[in-house]
Length: 347
Image (cartoon, rainbow, N blue to C red; front, side):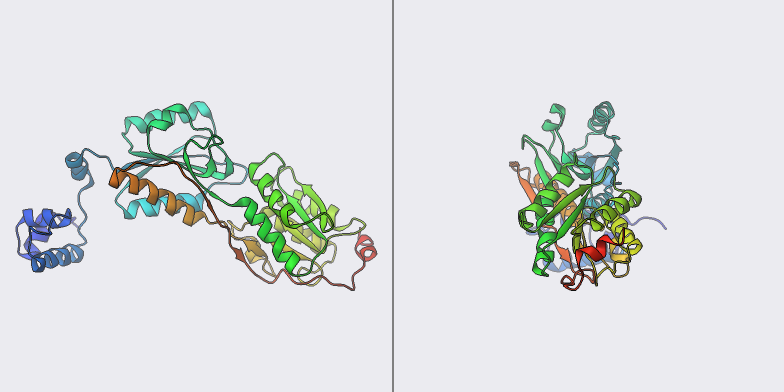
């Protein structure tokens, strides 16, 4: 079907094309009678009229384009953040150009050159997991927001999840349920995300409550199962586990099944994310701490569009989004009738 034009809107509303232009560009007030404005808006809606982006760019000398730098990692891709950013920008009439840097500085430099040649109006840097990001100097001349990563020098606005708060929330859920022996299965120790999540757990799990943190070199299910089995067969095994990634939670559930420990009855389990919806699909479903990916993406794009639209001063901000809990069946109070020797005998 042919795309509707401004002249089609004018014909349907019974007005001139110039009247359509004034109203749809926000200049109808004081120039066009309210009744005619309503006719024009109704006609545009009925015809599903959308202004021609190229024509708008030529008139305004703006590209209405935002460049996005991203890359994959061992944790996967930031698909939820990327899709939410795309939807928010598209609804506002902006185009996103995605560039995969592969985490390589030379590739990133070439990507920035390409985006500048395309005359992007702003930049988003979207990381697959929370990490430090040092923006190159050339990036500082363009409105830029970091999503799921942060500049250690705080020179660029960042929007990140409160990973330490997520760890503290998971631990508090278990403490409130009555657990005094809580273990932690964490990802690579050098990961910023892991470090913050473990630190959050330790804020709540005091010395007398503490169980050793078991770090796993990767985030695969098999390695997590080995780590969980090690923790669950020690002399005084934990009655609850916090897993810093959903695949680690799957591995922990597998280890518990091998040891004939029933999740919910014998062992409580909390996962610090569920991006792939693995933890929530287990039986029983695992209590998770949700990542605010969509909210972060929407906030970042909205902030950029607000700056581009109002052309106002843009102060640097560091925003941290709360990670809310999703309570499910995997957390109950500890069984007081299970002795440490019983679990140790399962080795």
